[in-house]
Every structure is written in C-alpha cells, then in structure tokens.
Image (tube, rainbow, N blue to C red; front, side, top):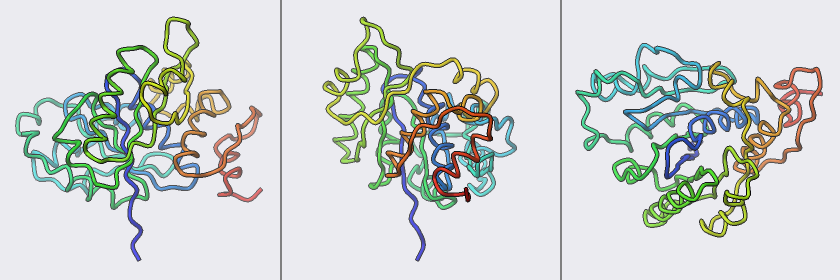
Length: 265
C-alpha cells in the first residue's frame, strides 16, 4: 500500500513575519524525527526558499515547469538532512510566459508530494484564492504571525479564509517573539485568532546568520531557545515527544537523532 503524503501549509497574512525561514527550519526538525520532507515555495514572484536553503542557481525551477514544459522530476533537489526542495525560481524573464490564473496547483502539488512523506508548502503572504482553492482537501495549515496588531489582524483574515474553504487550521506560531508591553501577548493573540498556539519562537539573531549561510538555525545554534522551540513545534505537529536539549560539545544532529530513536545510544 502506497503511503499518502501529508500536506502542511505555512501561511501568514503579512510578509516579513519569518514564514519562509520557519518553514525550512521546521522541515529540518521534522527530518531529524525521520520524516522525508519536500519543501516548496508557492510565491512565483518573490520566492526565496531556494536561497534560504542554500540552493543557489538551480538549473531547473518551477518557473521552467510552468513556462517551458519541464517536468517536476527535473526540479527536485536534495539538500542536507534528506530534505528535498522544489525551487520556484527568482528570474523575472520566465514569468513573462506564465499566467498565474491558469496554473493547476493541484497537479503541481500532487506530483511534488510523491517524493516524500510530508509536503511543506510555503504559501505567499496574504490571500491568493488561485492557490488556496487548489490545495488538497487534507491540507493542514499553520499560520505564522508576529505580535503586532496589523500582523495578527491579517492572520485572522487568513484563518477566516481557510475556514470558509473548509481547510483544517492546526493553530498558529508566534514568531520572532520578544517581550514588550506595547506588543500583543501570546494569550491575547490566541484569544483574537481563536485557534491553538503551536509555539512561541523567540527573536534570535542566529536565525539571521543561518539565513545568510543557507543553513538551518539547528545547525548553527542547536541548543538555543529558538532551536528547541522549533524542535518542539515539529514534535507537536508530528505527535512526537521532545525534551529540550542542553548544550554540550557533542554533535547536536547525531544527539537529536539518538534522542528521537533514529540512532543507537
């Protein structure tokens, strides 16, 4: 019996909330739990998942699939941690031959998801009916927000959209959090969005450094609060157990895999 992929979409009402970098890092965390992950950026114009994952200048991208009749198989790339990436492309030239209103997102998703156990979708910010209506009925959505009022209000609009499409919203992640009396608290945001909070990811410059290097924050600062928060989010989505890892001088990726039972002690 063929195992069906699990479809998880990371969405946000506004740009700049760290959705793409969080999608990548949660994917890395899930791969540590032994899942085979496929990542794809659905923003045809402002995609940067390929850059964040360190996949620079791929020969074939989703743009080529949509505009030049290339196949999905030709633009699936494996990076570290057994993660597969389908890069969308960053060149405007190919966009001239693409009409976003006539893209069969359902077909793209079905073909791309066949390469892994979990298909993580980095949706463009805001509301895009062409994409949202093409998502599989079994899609699970995680909404990413910051603690500012505009970000939360736009996250609420996004949640309402998925409710109307009858797509399951698992909850939200409060990203780049820092305690400030002028910002909304996690409890206040949960009350506004009326969905469970999946995790609070603290603001950490290690994330900026990891993006610049095309690596996950789990590699660069593995025992930090941000890394443990991301591992916990992945564990909760997967229904696994996780205990925060304390820093030591050992190989953190091997230690994490031992912790989740993928390597012998």
